[in-house]
Amino acid sequence: MSGDNNRMAVWLEISEEGNRFAYTSSIDTALSQAQMQIASLDETIVSVQNLKPDCDQIDYALAASSGALCGLLDVFLIGKPGESPLGDITDKWFENRICNFAKICGWKGNEKNPVKSAIGFLERTFKVPYDQKGCGDADSLDFDLTPSNHHFKSLAHNPNLLGLFFSILDQFTNSSHFVSDGQLVELTDADGKFQLRGNTFLGRLWCGFANWIGHLMSDVSGSSGSQSRGTGIPSPLWTWTNSVIALKAQLGIPANQFDKDINELALNLFKEGYDVRFQTAQVIPVLINELVVRLFYAIRRLMKYYRETEKQDRSFKMMWTACRPFKNATISRMLTVAHGAFCLVDIGDATIRGFVTGAGSFNPVEFFLRLNLVGIGRLTISLYGETRREINYHKAKKEAEFAQKEKTILAYYIEGLHTLKDLYDDQEYLTFVDDLRQNEYITAFAKTSALAEKRGVPDWEILRTIEDINKYFTNQNN
Image (tube, rainbow, N blue to C red; front, top):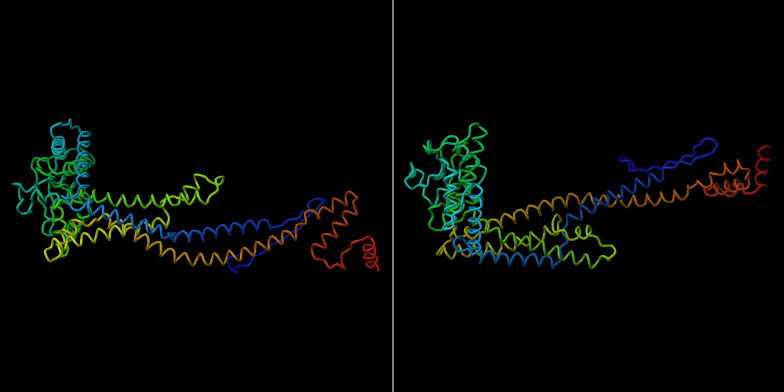
């Protein structure tokens, strides 16, 4: 098939090989190529169909129900820091992980107060120069540092890439960097006793990285001297407010009022207990929602597979393809509905609490303390996927429509090829040369007559009998 004019050609050839004729045809080749094109067009059509979700009312109902129930789970079991039953579980989980990490680093254990002992061991083992707490530390008044905010204000305590950068920088230069009142502040010669270990640059770099990880682990559940829950390390979803101010300061751009207000809001949330531990607790209902929806999808498709597939036709591969709960538009749409329902319940509760505690006005701190940012983030990812899939669908839809038309043309073409193949299947008749060689004149003569008839030679021109042959050659001689 030519791409320029969409015309198809089939050529036929009869050749002579030695003392006999051979029939050469491209019909089989053309058929094979046409079938390959049909298969390619089918793939294009199916790929476009896969971009469109195949959800029924039960799918939507199950997804929305899962999201709503998990939203209620978030409202009553997550709530806000200090009033979170699931938050208490994640706090305990982090304490156990701290003890495990301390044992790996050489801690011998303490039966009386293992968590405080493990934290104290990590604080002594992974010393850093930027751990000013504000209690009599040098220049603490200038930074407005207190034990409840220094983990947030200290950039090296932020669990992100910028935090790692400033941790390495502070350890190499024995300094400390803080964000306070919308400004990046540096404390030089922060700790006269600090000495970064390592004999080479790479060795010191590795020790700096290890100190950053180890010190963060010592601060996850507060300090060894904390009398209550303690201030952990800030949530990565809020430390970006510090990062914006720090990056602007490095570029010589002053922070605007919006930057300061958001940073102050994030600091207030942290002082209320919104840290990595509480952020982890918020992951639980979102994860449950995700798993339940995928389970609903898989179970329904599994039942449909066994209902519609005969026993002798079943296979594990086909079953897995039918009920695989990921990488298809249907499960993506169900997840979007589920996380949307979850966020509606969560945002509704947070908004009501914000007005109730605001005494006639809106309390943004209460609102964001109860707002599940993990759920918001997961919904955002789903909406992005839906938007991208819809754009791809409309682009591919035109290709699918053209492919369907081309498939119809190819179907007619294949039908014609089959007709040609049946019409020009002359292998049996072209053996008349062998018949002549074996003196089977009558058989050979009958084959030539049949071949002429098959090729559409007019009946009055076909030589069917010996009389017809004699008459033909007599006329030729005259």
